[in-house]
Structure formats: structure tokens, C-alpha cells
Length: 161
Ligand SMILES: [Fe+2]
Ligand SMILES: [Fe+2]
Image 1 (cartoon, rainbow, N blue to C red):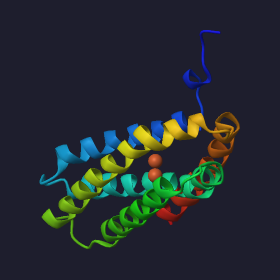
Image 2 (cartoon, helix red, strand yellow):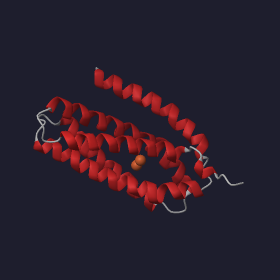
Image 3 (cartoon, protein in one colour):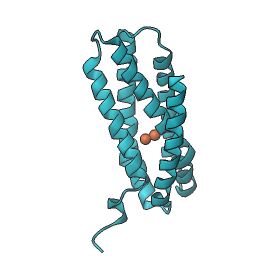
């Protein structure tokens, strides 16, 4: 058969579409950085933080544990979890920031660079290993979709309130 499982939408494809979405938001932010639109900058930064928080939670609850059970070595996942913790620290600093100033822009920029690095490792190392493993990534895709809906509702509710 010429088609492989790899060309179909699986859990990794879904997670990678989050990566691409958030990359677009970071690019939009880069255009606004330093401008007078402090309201737009804050809103965009908060959207980035919410997207990343939901994405990280999905990976930590569903994706990483399944891989941990399937991979022989855990180093890639240990590193990924440490990177999540560091990203969350930056996210908290952005969410708690009082002023939308140069320091605020710097936090968003550094978070963007940090996420670029993390995504590169997921795309380049973790996703290929996941696809080569016995984990059912098609079934996991459904699981991720359901959980994502719940989390998005929770987080957008929390932000509006
Ligand atoms: Fe991740
Ligand atoms: Fe990710």
C-alpha cells in the first residue's frame, strides 16, 4: 500500500497544528512589540499564554505519559517536562505583569524563542519516536480533541470572569 499511517491525521498532527497556530500569534506579537497598542499587545500575549497552557496540559495529561510507558528511555520526555516548567514560569510572569512595556515585550519574545526550541525537539525527535512506537496515535487524537474542548472552555471562562 502506498499510503502510510504517517500521512493521516494523528495525535502528533493535532499537536503540531497547535504549534503552528501559536507561532503565528508570536509573529503577530513581534509586529506589535514596542508599539503604542498596549491593549492589543496584552490581549495577544494573554491569548498566547492560554493556548500554550492548554497545549502543555494536553501533552502532560495524555501524550507524554503514553510515550513514557512506550519508550525505552525517558530522557527526551524528562527534558520536555523541564522545558514545560520553564515555559510556565515565563507564562506566569507575563500573566502577572503590571505594565505592558519593553520588559513585557522581552518576556513574550523570550517565551517565543523558548517555544521554538521546544517545538523543534518535539517535531524532530519526539514525534518520530512516537510514530515508530506501539502507541495508538489515531485513538489518542480523539482523546486529545475531547480534552482540548473541555480545557479551552475552562480557560476562556476563567479569563472572561
Ligand atoms: Fe511540549
Ligand atoms: Fe507541543
